[in-house]
Image (cartoon, rainbow, N blue to C red; front, side, top):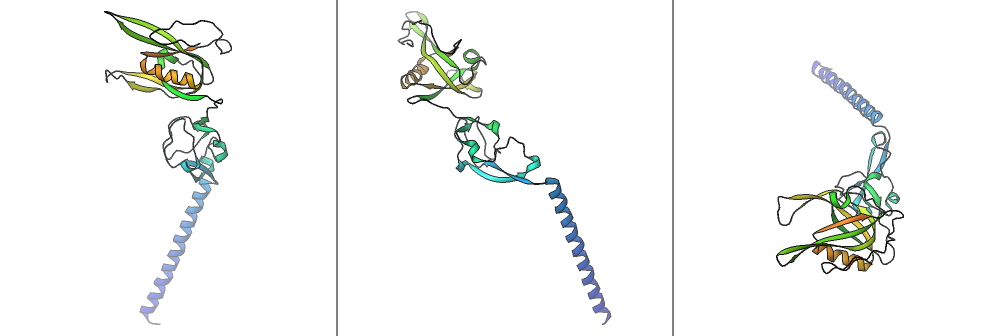
Length: 235
């Protein structure tokens, strides 16, 4: 074997040793990462955004693997855990589903309708109204009578069941775009007649207000409000 061949063999041996060293280093790195990450678990992630109070379907989801040690116990891992649930708020795509992000959907009685309206966050709710409460819904009006304006009010819905309360939203005034007010979307379970009445009165009323009902949550008073602003009171 001449000197050139010996050098070639030596270079091949050195290359083989280098490959073994690199391979061992890669294996060691992979092992250390695997030891640090640990066991993985399967969770649910949104493929597309889901609006608030909307049901989350399997078409919205994908299953992904994440390290179990970094996965909180509140993560949703089973589709059965979403049965009868809706999004508690607007959920963006890519969100990992957790129990606090969903809430039980409304349970309507036969014939009831679910309807949501915006209520002034300060004067209409004041942080006291909660899901499951019953409230009376009042409307206030301004009517021009000659040279003066007449103020009037009416109870338009009696004992409305609150099924959901959304998040505070800034609403711009239709007449003055620089003026904004904070409002909450409140969802009610109403009869067909009351839902139609609330929809109509919301369009004409200057302000919609809620009144909490004390005691058992059912209205027991016999107060009958006189018709005002061409609006019949709740009976």
